Length: 462
Length: 152
Image (cartoon, rainbow over all chains, first blue to last red; front, top):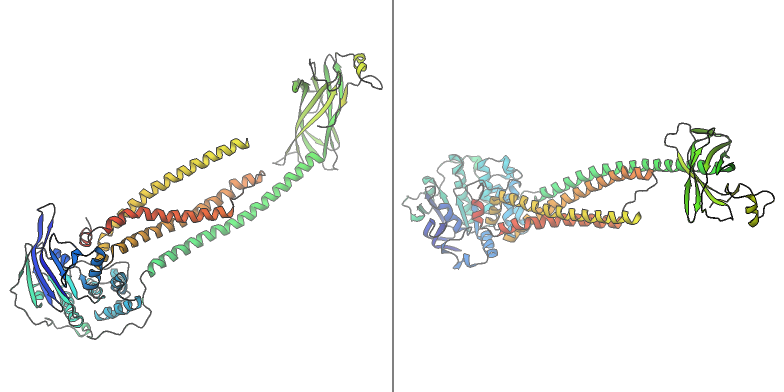
């Protein structure tokens, strides 16, 4: 693989804009180690982003084996990033909610460059080669800066890219750790044969590259740094020496990406299921209790209804003519059900005379010596009312007789102090009533009676 | 009496449907704003994924899937709480009416089941539609711009 940058320029802002990188040309061949030094703001990071096809150059071309990467569709550029470039950034770049080994496996899973099992096997291998085999399941939050950077190096190499871009990978690390990381990169470069472009502030580290460049105000110039042998400048403690050959893959099931997500969803569903199961179980209990209460209530209402309608018989007992259109009505209520008493609030009785097709109410009051208030009915109770039935043009269903309706409303209970167990009973009694101002002879002209015409004639309920 | 009650209930139902529709629209805007903020907070993470070789559509799928899963779970929780409220109603006011001889009757099981499925589907669709714009926007951004926008 050959990657060639041709006169790369990057401007920010409206034209002409600020040129962060100006006309940089660079050619990288497989296995090369190049270092770039420069002051902050000299354009090193922008150049690295352009080399990795992370940002489009304003001018110039980035050629991969002769093909301009920026003429490719975005999906192929993504494939280029996945298969040809590995990045180590100057900031902590691990995904905090994934373990170290998951982080390393992510690029392979995203790029689908290998099977999941293979990706995890290689991730474990790389983790071991950066000397973090015992930290594979650790989350970034529990790792030191140096450990995180080593995981980032392993991640950058998961797809075995021919180019590794390390943009100040040791910027926030101490000197020892910094040297460790660079040693690691060099060692891995030897075994994996990738090209390494290292951006650093440290001239000592830069000297270890085969070629060194310096960025000044966006321009790249070959550096005159004397090159040194690519040997560690500091003796590495035995514990930090990693095997050159691939470490054996950890003999355990690979950790699958997304296990946490599904774990979280499962936990949510379990908690929700427990809460709602408790609610619905409680509801079943309440429903049974309430159904029982409703049945009890229905039974009480049915019993009350039976008491009020079947055990208490009521009707007109008599109607007496008091003269001058005034009459006295006697009704009765009879307890026909046995020894148990029935308590009744005296009926509110009203009288109506049919005139044409409507009922005309006539004045009616309880008799002066009549029963009022709550009465205890053990056998038979009579109620008396007086009413005035001087009505003209009454309907004559029987010749010369008025058609009269008595409507009574009463409250019935088995208890003298009812507590909800009260039934409202409505009775209608119908009679024919002889008007006061019609003589018997007139009545007898059109109807026959064994004697005098009666004052009232009972009618069946209707 | 029955006809007027039925008419009143129909009007109430239409009013409730309209209210629900407005709520859905408001929720859509809310979800969109929420996911705009969530995506914005994760610009660097998204940029890193792109630098690692993630396809733009993969990033978009991840964001949309997350939104759909979250809102669907929210819908599921809402369904449970709605059922709990309905049960509370049935066991309080419904019980009172049952004592007076007016039984509380549930809608047919098929209606409830279809309603539940629709509620979950609506929730997931709400997440998908709400997060589409932020996901589309981030899909079109250059990886380096995403990495650099962290903390801005």
